[in-house]
Image (cartoon, rainbow, N blue to C red; front, side, top):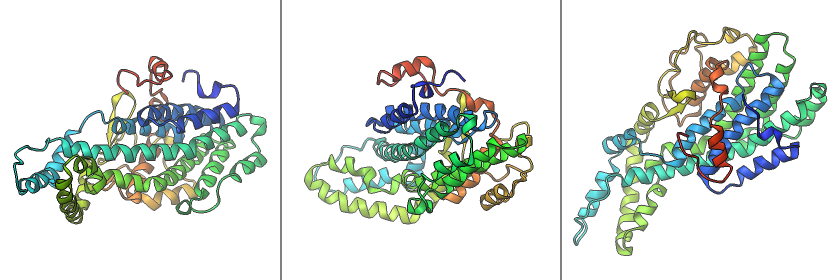
Length: 381
């Protein structure tokens, strides 16, 4: 991994200031690119403390954020979205029918991409908010953990206690950070592991607890993004563009239509969207479909994680995935359900924990130079 620009800013305070700067960027596209890059840098920061032979949570966050950027940028309207809207939701068809029933000359047809574009705009907003929310909470914690424990002489129980005592007590549903306390404690335990297997299991346990915390925090944004076709806010711009008298007719009728579609199609839509639209872009342009089983490499899991022996880790994984020996049935069925997501994530994190390709940089140095000027870099992002 090349030099870590985030960690060479000169002081711990400067690192935190840079993270705060990124969180305050108002342009979602630029902000997401910085978030992706800083997750990569923070991966390196955590590796200084817990070792660099296992992926930490920020390793996976780098590629998840990079994938999120595709939706935030609205680079294209996926063919799958057009097909699903046309065949399953049929919003465009029914809206057109409504307009043709109005008095007067309404021969002008709606742009066939108007509905997908409106939905994607809402999806982009939901993903951008979630991307920022998680970064703003977790990135400063990773930086502080690194700052306290990067010096081996300071890796003491007292330093760990001082760190975790700054976290908010209580369950995540009430704004607490109890899972994060346990996760960072497990990361600390990895620094004292007596074998590669023990270290790998402590790190995986920490990764999954951070993932569980993050996924709980993201629940409303994930559900909002996936269910955008049934959210009236997706269509506000379309409706507002109509003449006032027409808007007065269209709004209540369209609200009724969207509500009816939600009741009859929401569950099928969520499953179809998970199966055909949800992906994770990995290094080298590899695309992992979340609606399919996690692909098996040479072996399902690294040797140090097969079998799992750490009792707390086994219990956590079994909560979501009872099939500890295989990647079979790891495919997500409905991404809006947190238990479903965690079953996939558990297999993803475990199977790819020692995949060295994930440690690669998300952007080239030339792209970072352009980003530093406040512009979107050219080339594949």
